[in-house]
Image (cartoon, rainbow, N blue to C red; front, side, top):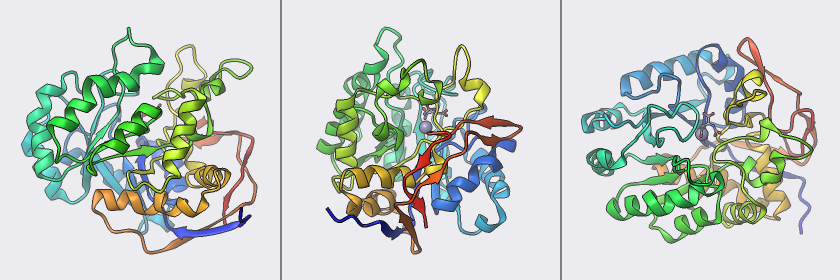
Length: 348
Ligand code: NCD
Ligand code: ZN
C-alpha cells in the first residue's frame, strides 16, 4: 500500500443535496461551495419545487445566500418535484430552461416533505415518456411506503415492485437510483443498462445500523433510507471504489434543527456537508482505493448527466481537523455527522 498522505483531484460535485430555504440557506451553502463546483439541489421544500418557475426563484435565493467568494464559482443544479399532476409540457419547459437538470420521484410519504409526491407512478407514465424524449433524468427515492413492509426491506421491495418495471418500460430514460443502501440496489444498477446509475452517500459507507443504537438511541444517525446491516455497507464501499462509472458521489446532506432531531418523533436526515469530500477520502483511503476517488467524485456524475467535468483541482491531506459540536442553522443549531470528533482527511 502506498501511504500517500495527499491527493489532488479534479474539483468534485455533489449529485444529491438538501439546502432548505430562507435563512437556513446561508448556514449550509458555504460548506458545499467550498468543496464542490456544483450540487444537485433536492426540491423537497415544505412547498415543493414543482415547476420551472419555482425552480428559477429557488435558484436565485440560493445564489443570493451564497458567501460572496462562491457566487461565481458555484452552480446549483435545480430539480423538479414530480407529482401526480406534473404535465409533459412542464418537462419541456424545464429542459429549455437550461438550469433544471432532473426530476425527483418521491413516493408519497417515503421521507421528509414527500407527502405531495407521487401516489401512483403509472399515472406519470406519459411524463416519464416525455422525460426520456427530452433526455431529462429521473432521480428516484427508492423505498416503498407500505407500512406492512419492514423498514429495512423497503428499498429491496421497491426494486421488485417498481424499479424493475420502470427500467423495462422506459429503456431510454436516464435513471439515478439515489442514496442506495443495499447489495440488491448495487446488483440492480450493475446489471442494468448504462442509462441507470446510482449515488452513494458517505454516511451509508461509514456506518451500519448498529450506529443507530450504540449505547442508546442516536437520532443524529437516523436518515432515510435507514442505515443497513454491515454486509450492505460493505457492498456499497465495494461498488463506490470499484471504478464502475455507474456509481457517483451524492452526499444527501440533509440538515434539520437539533430540536427536530432530538425529539419524540425525530426527523430523518444527516448533515454531512462539513466533510462533503473528506468523509469519502477517508472511506476510499481505508479501502486502499484513493486512486478511484477522483472518478467517483468528479467524473462519473457529470459524464452521466452530460455536463462538462470541472477544470480546477482540490488537494486533500490525511490530516485531522476538529468537527464542531453544532453548526449555526438559521436561528437554531444543527448537529453535524461526527460532532465533536474529527475529519481524518482535510482540504489542504
Ligand atoms: C432527506 C431530507 O431531510 O430532506 N432526509 C433523509 O433522511 N435523507 C430526504 C431524503 O433524501 O430522503
Ligand atoms: Zn435526499
